[in-house]
Length: 220
Ligand code: 5RP
Image (cartoon, rainbow, N blue to C red; front, side):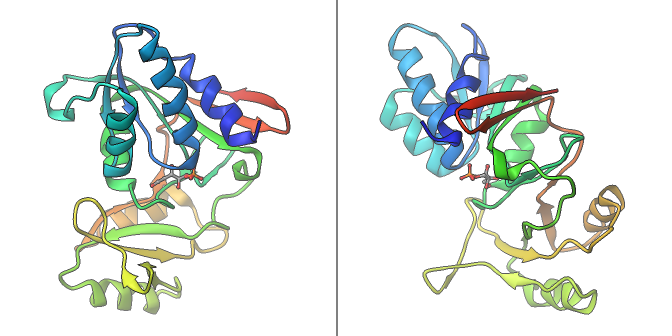
């Protein structure tokens, strides 16, 4: 079994009958969804809140019941992947482009669990480019500002076309400056007009499940 599968399957054990569950996006979340679908087939009763169209499609295909985030007062637990996670369980997310809905769902959740393979557990965030979701209107100005600050922005493309998020925005991937205080950097990003959201998820995850070789390690 690969590391993503190990982490994803273990995470599905955290889902209990009657819960409202935030359903993450990506290739690791895929395994959690598959394991969850199996448990739903066996009689587990949950309501899922999907973080992307891709996850909605998988849930529908596999018979996982979904509700809109606006039809629930809270989410009991969210299980999602991440691109990098440090020792404080701060992370970079958005490699799959779903960071905006993922952050909205995480913030509405009582518990957030991340599932990753071992190479994503890092000492310092920033080897993975930081995804920034920007408004298409004026995006060139956001990109110019990042360029001016030496952040090496790249407008994300997919098959030569500009990548468009589920909510109709662009993604600009930037380099997190070395030795940057991530809290201060996130606070700066939050001030920028045209920036819809960014992939720094700080103080949000409660539990990290790492597939490592043929084992699972759990950090809190
Ligand atoms: C999508 C995400 C994903 O959770 C993240 O990119 C990890 O994906 P994967 O499990 O495929 O490596 O943040 O926006």
